Length: 515
Ligand SMILES: CC(=O)N[C@H]1[C@@H](OP(=O)(O)OP(=O)(O)OC[C@H]2O[C@@H](n3ccc(=O)[nH]c3=O)[C@H](O)[C@@H]2O)O[C@H](CO)[C@@H](O)[C@@H]1O
Ligand SMILES: C=C(OP(=O)(O)O)C(=O)O
Image 1 (cartoon, rainbow, N blue to C red):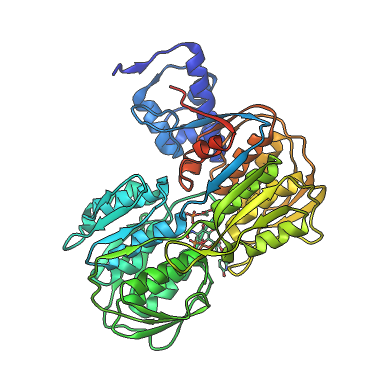
Image 2 (tube, rainbow, N blue to C red; image 1 turned 90 degrees about the vertical axis):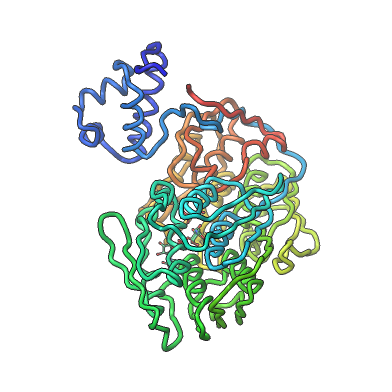
């Protein structure tokens, strides 16, 4: 490999633009990037203008400090998407299993000394990161077939000293290692959780929930240092301070191997929690109250079973695909929609004027989750009278809210969207203005969106948050002309082959890399 990337001025200018965009997305000034790299602001300016030759080493360091792969050397897989918009979609598409159950079940496999087989796991970057972490501590995995069935085999003891810190830092789900590791490890450290840039996401509710199980945590130097006293048991019901999904999962996994009955109150009954409950039940842990906010867990100190479980379909992917049909004014059938977790969304869409049919219910492969197929037809939508806001389940799903920004943009009238949950997510939705939407940020949590929109193609860097990035992609499907969406790792974190699957429905999406 040559030492220096002395390529044409054009290439240097394109790399410079990528660096500038990645820097701006972090909200950094040139001076701040210069400081992080130990160079001058004028050097950064020259780099961004394409007036400075770059060594591979410098490029690597820039990627590292910006936490953004500027160019991909020797890697495979898409980096950017080029979209020819304005095409109608048609046909049918199956919803895949959920990211959030997938990562929870991978973490829960740490509770089992036996072999865990998970069926049709979403093959997404978030799952890859957790598999890398699992692999680093000695857990073996094998993809069994093209259906993405996955076999996980634990070692006799986890090698926590070898934990892959870089992979762990790229996902928030690492937080769900806390409870499983507590059972057999008195002391251990986990890196701070990463993931989407949605503003500060607290871990305090996790620490509060796990304290009655004997966990004490000191957070220093980028790590949570856990100290576990196995003689401590909850003496009364564990009451969660937030009805969060992953915190409920941590509490469940802490209770699962206790030789006791534990009651968890203010539990989330959301889809991924239900999948975890069904999985634990298959492992012999009795849980009463599945699907409610009070879970009673009859723990089983040793879990050693060869278990085979099929997580259920992703309601957020279902919402994404329905939004794709709405924004492109197409008729498509979205198969395998987990209806319990999409009812409120569909009720609101009905109020907005959506024309759709749904089939009778049938069961997902787990035998418990109810599915339907939904056929969406082109409809004349109007803004809802009241504001749209999410709630912990049962409520309009927090992760589905961004898709309503897109849908509001094609509806007649003005919609107020209130994301009280995340500090930053509403902000990322203003990227839709680059494609012609009229989106006004009222404050960090509220957006006014006025439709209908005359979409126009544009070049946009993915906002650093999964759902807003997908929303931008879907708007590009509607925008006549060519759009370019850069840095799509964030989408691949949560969706398997989304571009390819939309292409099968008639979209024109090409993946490419700069170098
Ligand atoms: C891997 C996984 O499963 N991720 C999901 C999970 O993340 P996770 O469970 O990690 O979500 P968080 O704990 O970050 O909660 C999300 C936000 O909601 C706030 N909050 C939550 C509950 C509550 O009763 N009050 C409250 O204020 C939290 O303070 C936080 O700001 O749940 C989120 C909320 O459904 C989803 O967006 C994520 O996709
Ligand atoms: C916020 C999300 O996920 P995570 O908890 O993995 O960041 C999401 O799925 O939109």
